[in-house]
Image (cartoon, rainbow, N blue to C red; front, side, top):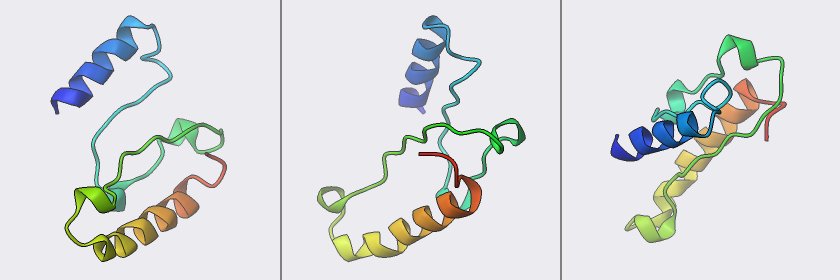
Length: 78
C-alpha cells in the first residue's frame, strides 16, 4: 500500500492522474475500466519471478492466469 501511495502521489505531481491508474489487484479480478476497453495502452505489472519464490514451478499457473486475463480483457493493450 505504501508503494501504491507513493506512485499515486508522484503521478499526481507530474500531472498524469487523469490518464494513469495504479492499484493493487489480484489478476483474477483484472478488468479494464469501461472508458479504456476500446482504446490501447500499456499495462505494467510486477508479478513474482523465480528468485522471489521458493519453487519457480508455482509460477506456471500464475503466468497462465496473467496471459488469460490479458487476452480476455486487454487484447489491444501492450
